[in-house]
Image (cartoon, rainbow, N blue to C red; front, side):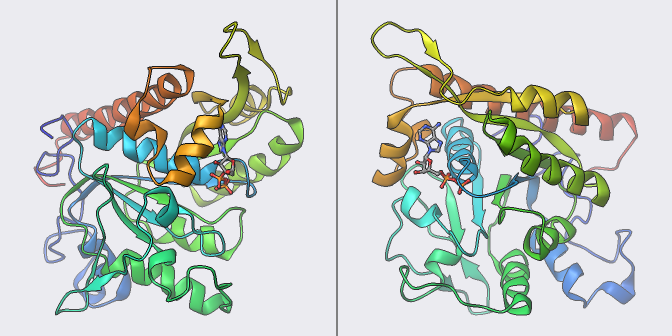
Length: 310
Ligand code: ADP
Protein backbone atom coordinates (compact mmCIF):
# COMPACT_ATOMS: atom_id res chain seq x y z
CA UNK A 1 0.00 0.00 0.00
CA UNK A 2 2.94 2.28 0.40
CA UNK A 3 2.52 3.94 -2.93
CA UNK A 4 3.13 7.59 -3.43
CA UNK A 5 -0.41 8.53 -2.70
CA UNK A 6 -1.12 6.47 0.46
CA UNK A 7 -3.69 7.57 3.01
CA UNK A 8 -1.14 9.14 5.29
CA UNK A 9 0.84 10.89 2.62
CA UNK A 10 0.76 14.58 2.02
CA UNK A 11 -1.85 14.35 -0.68
CA UNK A 12 -4.44 12.90 1.64
CA UNK A 13 -7.84 14.54 1.70
CA UNK A 14 -7.79 18.26 2.22
CA UNK A 15 -10.32 18.18 5.05
CA UNK A 16 -8.10 15.88 7.08
CA UNK A 17 -11.18 14.87 9.01
CA UNK A 18 -10.84 17.80 11.34
CA UNK A 19 -12.98 20.70 10.33
CA UNK A 20 -11.39 22.95 12.96
CA UNK A 21 -8.41 23.24 10.67
CA UNK A 22 -9.77 23.07 7.17
CA UNK A 23 -11.05 25.67 4.82
CA UNK A 24 -14.62 24.63 5.51
CA UNK A 25 -15.44 26.92 8.33
CA UNK A 26 -16.92 26.21 11.72
CA UNK A 27 -20.42 27.11 10.65
CA UNK A 28 -20.35 24.15 8.31
CA UNK A 29 -19.09 21.77 10.97
CA UNK A 30 -22.40 20.21 11.69
CA UNK A 31 -23.77 20.37 8.22
CA UNK A 32 -24.27 17.35 6.07
CA UNK A 33 -21.60 18.43 3.60
CA UNK A 34 -19.08 18.62 6.36
CA UNK A 35 -20.16 15.24 7.69
CA UNK A 36 -19.57 13.79 4.24
CA UNK A 37 -16.14 15.40 4.11
CA UNK A 38 -15.28 14.06 7.51
CA UNK A 39 -16.56 10.64 6.60
CA UNK A 40 -14.43 10.51 3.47
CA UNK A 41 -11.35 12.00 5.07
CA UNK A 42 -9.53 8.67 4.90
CA UNK A 43 -10.12 8.33 1.17
CA UNK A 44 -7.20 9.52 -0.89
CA UNK A 45 -8.39 9.35 -4.46
CA UNK A 46 -11.99 9.31 -5.62
CA UNK A 47 -13.02 8.73 -9.20
CA UNK A 48 -16.57 8.96 -10.47
CA UNK A 49 -17.37 6.66 -13.39
CA UNK A 50 -19.92 8.33 -15.65
CA UNK A 51 -21.62 7.54 -18.91
CA UNK A 52 -24.09 9.28 -21.14
CA UNK A 53 -26.50 6.37 -21.03
CA UNK A 54 -26.88 2.85 -19.70
CA UNK A 55 -25.49 -0.26 -21.33
CA UNK A 56 -22.09 1.05 -22.42
CA UNK A 57 -20.26 -0.88 -19.70
CA UNK A 58 -19.93 1.83 -17.02
CA UNK A 59 -20.46 -0.62 -14.14
CA UNK A 60 -18.20 -3.18 -15.79
CA UNK A 61 -15.40 -0.62 -16.09
CA UNK A 62 -15.94 0.55 -12.50
CA UNK A 63 -15.87 -3.00 -11.11
CA UNK A 64 -12.86 -4.07 -13.14
CA UNK A 65 -10.70 -1.07 -12.43
CA UNK A 66 -11.55 -1.41 -8.72
CA UNK A 67 -10.53 -5.08 -8.85
CA UNK A 68 -7.33 -4.26 -10.79
CA UNK A 69 -6.31 -1.66 -8.20
CA UNK A 70 -7.09 -4.09 -5.36
CA UNK A 71 -4.99 -6.71 -7.12
CA UNK A 72 -2.06 -4.26 -6.88
CA UNK A 73 -2.50 -4.19 -3.11
CA UNK A 74 -4.39 -0.92 -2.92
CA UNK A 75 -7.22 -0.44 -0.42
CA UNK A 76 -10.24 0.04 -2.67
CA UNK A 77 -13.92 0.80 -2.12
CA UNK A 78 -16.64 0.73 -4.73
CA UNK A 79 -19.78 2.76 -4.19
CA UNK A 80 -22.58 1.77 -6.54
CA UNK A 81 -25.17 4.53 -6.65
CA UNK A 82 -26.58 3.54 -10.03
CA UNK A 83 -29.92 3.39 -8.24
CA UNK A 84 -32.02 1.92 -11.02
CA UNK A 85 -29.44 -0.57 -12.26
CA UNK A 86 -27.27 -1.50 -9.29
CA UNK A 87 -25.07 -4.32 -10.47
CA UNK A 88 -22.11 -4.29 -8.08
CA UNK A 89 -23.61 -6.87 -5.72
CA UNK A 90 -23.79 -9.45 -8.50
CA UNK A 91 -20.51 -8.46 -10.11
CA UNK A 92 -18.67 -8.93 -6.80
CA UNK A 93 -20.55 -12.04 -5.68
CA UNK A 94 -22.08 -10.34 -2.64
CA UNK A 95 -25.68 -11.47 -2.99
CA UNK A 96 -27.45 -11.79 0.35
CA UNK A 97 -24.84 -9.73 2.19
CA UNK A 98 -26.75 -6.87 3.73
CA UNK A 99 -25.02 -3.72 4.87
CA UNK A 100 -24.35 -3.93 8.61
CA UNK A 101 -24.76 -0.88 10.82
CA UNK A 102 -22.22 0.28 13.38
CA UNK A 103 -23.35 1.54 16.79
CA UNK A 104 -23.01 5.12 15.66
CA UNK A 105 -25.08 4.58 12.52
CA UNK A 106 -22.27 3.93 10.06
CA UNK A 107 -22.69 1.40 7.25
CA UNK A 108 -20.14 -1.38 7.04
CA UNK A 109 -19.31 -2.42 3.48
CA UNK A 110 -19.09 -6.14 2.74
CA UNK A 111 -15.72 -7.15 1.33
CA UNK A 112 -15.64 -9.07 -1.96
CA UNK A 113 -13.33 -12.04 -2.50
CA UNK A 114 -11.03 -9.82 -4.55
CA UNK A 115 -10.66 -7.43 -1.60
CA UNK A 116 -12.85 -4.57 -2.82
CA UNK A 117 -15.19 -3.09 -0.18
CA UNK A 118 -18.54 -2.69 -1.85
CA UNK A 119 -21.54 -0.57 -0.99
CA UNK A 120 -24.48 -0.73 -3.35
CA UNK A 121 -28.10 0.15 -3.20
CA UNK A 122 -28.46 -3.52 -4.17
CA UNK A 123 -27.39 -4.64 -0.69
CA UNK A 124 -29.43 -1.97 1.03
CA UNK A 125 -32.81 -3.24 -0.17
CA UNK A 126 -34.55 -6.42 1.00
CA UNK A 127 -35.45 -7.76 -2.43
CA UNK A 128 -32.69 -7.20 -4.99
CA UNK A 129 -35.11 -7.98 -7.82
CA UNK A 130 -37.67 -5.40 -6.74
CA UNK A 131 -37.91 -2.25 -8.82
CA UNK A 132 -36.53 0.69 -6.92
CA UNK A 133 -39.34 3.22 -6.99
CA UNK A 134 -38.16 6.30 -5.18
CA UNK A 135 -38.97 9.91 -5.79
CA UNK A 136 -36.15 12.30 -6.61
CA UNK A 137 -35.45 13.71 -3.13
CA UNK A 138 -35.31 10.19 -1.68
CA UNK A 139 -32.79 9.08 -4.30
CA UNK A 140 -30.61 12.09 -3.66
CA UNK A 141 -30.89 11.45 0.08
CA UNK A 142 -29.73 7.85 -0.38
CA UNK A 143 -26.71 8.96 -2.39
CA UNK A 144 -25.76 11.48 0.27
CA UNK A 145 -26.39 8.95 3.03
CA UNK A 146 -24.02 6.46 1.41
CA UNK A 147 -21.38 9.16 1.02
CA UNK A 148 -21.84 10.41 4.56
CA UNK A 149 -22.28 7.19 6.49
CA UNK A 150 -20.26 4.40 4.92
CA UNK A 151 -17.47 3.30 7.22
CA UNK A 152 -14.81 2.87 4.53
CA UNK A 153 -11.81 3.32 6.79
CA UNK A 154 -8.62 4.27 4.96
CA UNK A 155 -8.87 3.87 1.21
CA UNK A 156 -6.35 4.44 -1.54
CA UNK A 157 -9.17 4.52 -4.05
CA UNK A 158 -12.90 5.06 -3.95
CA UNK A 159 -14.57 4.20 -7.26
CA UNK A 160 -18.07 5.65 -7.55
CA UNK A 161 -20.34 3.99 -10.09
CA UNK A 162 -22.66 6.90 -10.82
CA UNK A 163 -26.12 6.80 -12.35
CA UNK A 164 -26.01 7.32 -16.14
CA UNK A 165 -26.94 10.57 -17.85
CA UNK A 166 -26.73 14.15 -16.68
CA UNK A 167 -29.76 14.40 -14.40
CA UNK A 168 -30.20 15.10 -10.71
CA UNK A 169 -28.56 11.88 -9.53
CA UNK A 170 -25.15 12.20 -11.24
CA UNK A 171 -25.35 15.91 -10.41
CA UNK A 172 -25.71 15.08 -6.71
CA UNK A 173 -22.79 12.66 -6.92
CA UNK A 174 -20.52 15.18 -8.62
CA UNK A 175 -21.52 18.05 -6.37
CA UNK A 176 -21.17 16.01 -3.20
CA UNK A 177 -17.98 13.98 -3.61
CA UNK A 178 -15.30 16.07 -1.93
CA UNK A 179 -11.96 16.66 -3.59
CA UNK A 180 -12.35 14.19 -6.47
CA UNK A 181 -9.50 13.09 -8.67
CA UNK A 182 -12.12 13.37 -11.37
CA UNK A 183 -14.45 11.62 -13.77
CA UNK A 184 -13.75 8.60 -15.90
CA UNK A 185 -16.25 8.79 -18.73
CA UNK A 186 -17.18 5.58 -20.51
CA UNK A 187 -18.30 5.42 -24.12
CA UNK A 188 -18.66 2.84 -26.83
CA UNK A 189 -17.13 3.58 -30.24
CA UNK A 190 -20.34 4.40 -32.13
CA UNK A 191 -20.98 7.98 -33.15
CA UNK A 192 -24.46 7.73 -31.69
CA UNK A 193 -22.94 7.03 -28.28
CA UNK A 194 -20.70 10.05 -28.68
CA UNK A 195 -23.65 12.46 -28.57
CA UNK A 196 -24.72 11.17 -25.15
CA UNK A 197 -21.20 10.98 -23.81
CA UNK A 198 -20.47 14.50 -25.04
CA UNK A 199 -23.26 15.65 -22.74
CA UNK A 200 -21.54 13.90 -19.81
CA UNK A 201 -18.25 15.61 -20.62
CA UNK A 202 -19.96 18.99 -21.06
CA UNK A 203 -21.73 18.36 -17.74
CA UNK A 204 -18.34 17.92 -16.03
CA UNK A 205 -17.05 21.10 -17.67
CA UNK A 206 -20.09 23.03 -16.52
CA UNK A 207 -19.65 21.83 -12.96
CA UNK A 208 -15.88 22.39 -13.11
CA UNK A 209 -15.61 18.72 -12.20
CA UNK A 210 -12.20 17.46 -13.34
CA UNK A 211 -12.15 14.91 -16.15
CA UNK A 212 -9.46 12.28 -15.79
CA UNK A 213 -10.25 10.87 -19.22
CA UNK A 214 -12.30 8.69 -21.48
CA UNK A 215 -12.56 4.90 -21.66
CA UNK A 216 -13.71 3.38 -24.93
CA UNK A 217 -15.42 0.12 -24.04
CA UNK A 218 -16.48 -2.56 -26.52
CA UNK A 219 -13.66 -1.22 -28.63
CA UNK A 220 -13.27 -3.94 -31.26
CA UNK A 221 -13.15 -7.67 -30.77
CA UNK A 222 -9.88 -9.57 -30.88
CA UNK A 223 -10.43 -12.97 -32.49
CA UNK A 224 -9.15 -15.64 -30.09
CA UNK A 225 -8.26 -17.82 -33.08
CA UNK A 226 -6.35 -15.53 -35.42
CA UNK A 227 -5.63 -12.57 -33.07
CA UNK A 228 -7.03 -10.07 -35.58
CA UNK A 229 -9.20 -7.21 -34.33
CA UNK A 230 -12.66 -6.65 -35.77
CA UNK A 231 -14.43 -3.29 -35.37
CA UNK A 232 -17.79 -4.53 -34.17
CA UNK A 233 -18.99 -0.97 -33.48
CA UNK A 234 -17.00 1.27 -35.80
CA UNK A 235 -17.23 5.01 -35.24
CA UNK A 236 -14.22 6.39 -33.41
CA UNK A 237 -16.33 8.10 -30.73
CA UNK A 238 -13.53 8.23 -28.17
CA UNK A 239 -11.14 9.96 -30.58
CA UNK A 240 -13.74 12.56 -31.52
CA UNK A 241 -14.62 13.21 -27.86
CA UNK A 242 -11.00 13.31 -26.80
CA UNK A 243 -10.28 16.00 -29.37
CA UNK A 244 -13.40 18.02 -28.66
CA UNK A 245 -12.97 18.04 -24.87
CA UNK A 246 -9.20 17.85 -24.77
CA UNK A 247 -9.46 14.77 -22.56
CA UNK A 248 -7.09 11.81 -22.83
CA UNK A 249 -8.22 8.34 -23.81
CA UNK A 250 -7.22 6.25 -20.81
CA UNK A 251 -7.94 2.84 -22.29
CA UNK A 252 -9.73 0.98 -25.05
CA UNK A 253 -11.31 -2.19 -23.74
CA UNK A 254 -12.27 -4.74 -26.40
CA UNK A 255 -15.37 -6.88 -26.41
CA UNK A 256 -14.74 -10.23 -24.82
CA UNK A 257 -17.37 -12.72 -23.70
CA UNK A 258 -15.25 -13.44 -20.62
CA UNK A 259 -16.01 -9.92 -19.37
CA UNK A 260 -19.72 -10.63 -19.12
CA UNK A 261 -19.23 -14.22 -17.95
CA UNK A 262 -16.96 -13.10 -15.12
CA UNK A 263 -19.34 -10.22 -14.31
CA UNK A 264 -22.17 -12.71 -13.97
CA UNK A 265 -20.07 -15.11 -11.92
CA UNK A 266 -19.31 -12.56 -9.21
CA UNK A 267 -15.59 -12.14 -9.86
CA UNK A 268 -14.55 -9.27 -12.13
CA UNK A 269 -12.21 -10.41 -14.91
CA UNK A 270 -9.50 -8.05 -13.66
CA UNK A 271 -9.44 -9.91 -10.34
CA UNK A 272 -8.56 -13.08 -12.22
CA UNK A 273 -6.30 -11.54 -14.85
CA UNK A 274 -6.46 -14.92 -16.55
CA UNK A 275 -4.01 -14.71 -19.38
CA UNK A 276 -2.81 -11.17 -19.77
CA UNK A 277 -5.04 -10.89 -22.85
CA UNK A 278 -6.25 -7.65 -24.48
CA UNK A 279 -9.00 -6.92 -21.95
CA UNK A 280 -6.69 -7.45 -18.98
CA UNK A 281 -4.06 -5.26 -20.67
CA UNK A 282 -6.61 -2.48 -21.27
CA UNK A 283 -7.80 -2.54 -17.68
CA UNK A 284 -4.21 -2.49 -16.44
CA UNK A 285 -3.60 0.52 -18.71
CA UNK A 286 -6.57 2.24 -17.10
CA UNK A 287 -5.28 1.47 -13.59
CA UNK A 288 -1.81 2.75 -14.63
CA UNK A 289 -3.32 5.98 -15.97
CA UNK A 290 -5.26 6.56 -12.75
CA UNK A 291 -2.25 5.95 -10.54
CA UNK A 292 -0.18 8.28 -12.70
CA UNK A 293 -2.82 10.99 -12.38
CA UNK A 294 -2.95 10.48 -8.60
CA UNK A 295 0.83 10.68 -8.36
CA UNK A 296 0.85 13.88 -10.45
CA UNK A 297 -1.73 15.42 -8.16
CA UNK A 298 0.32 14.41 -5.12
CA UNK A 299 3.45 15.92 -6.64
CA UNK A 300 1.57 19.12 -7.49
CA UNK A 301 0.39 19.43 -3.92
CA UNK A 302 3.89 18.85 -2.57
CA UNK A 303 5.28 21.46 -4.94
CA UNK A 304 2.60 23.89 -3.77
CA UNK A 305 3.76 23.27 -0.21
CA UNK A 306 0.56 21.69 0.97
CA UNK A 307 0.94 20.56 4.57
CA UNK A 308 0.90 16.87 5.36
CA UNK A 309 -2.63 15.64 5.37
CA UNK A 310 -3.81 18.43 3.06
P1 ADP B 1 -23.80 0.03 -17.80
O1 ADP B 1 -23.28 0.09 -16.40
O2 ADP B 1 -23.21 1.10 -18.67
O3 ADP B 1 -25.28 0.00 -17.88
P2 ADP B 1 -22.83 -2.70 -17.80
O4 ADP B 1 -21.48 -2.53 -17.20
O5 ADP B 1 -23.92 -3.22 -16.94
O6 ADP B 1 -23.30 -1.33 -18.47
O7 ADP B 1 -22.64 -3.61 -19.10
C1 ADP B 1 -23.74 -3.96 -19.92
C2 ADP B 1 -23.52 -5.39 -20.41
O8 ADP B 1 -22.43 -5.42 -21.30
C3 ADP B 1 -23.22 -6.38 -19.30
O9 ADP B 1 -23.84 -7.60 -19.58
C4 ADP B 1 -21.70 -6.54 -19.36
O10 ADP B 1 -21.27 -7.81 -18.90
C5 ADP B 1 -21.46 -6.40 -20.86
N1 ADP B 1 -20.12 -5.84 -21.18
C6 ADP B 1 -19.63 -4.65 -20.79
N2 ADP B 1 -18.39 -4.47 -21.29
C7 ADP B 1 -18.09 -5.58 -22.02
C8 ADP B 1 -16.96 -6.01 -22.79
N3 ADP B 1 -15.87 -5.24 -22.92
N4 ADP B 1 -17.01 -7.23 -23.38
C9 ADP B 1 -18.12 -8.01 -23.25
N5 ADP B 1 -19.21 -7.67 -22.55
C10 ADP B 1 -19.22 -6.47 -21.93
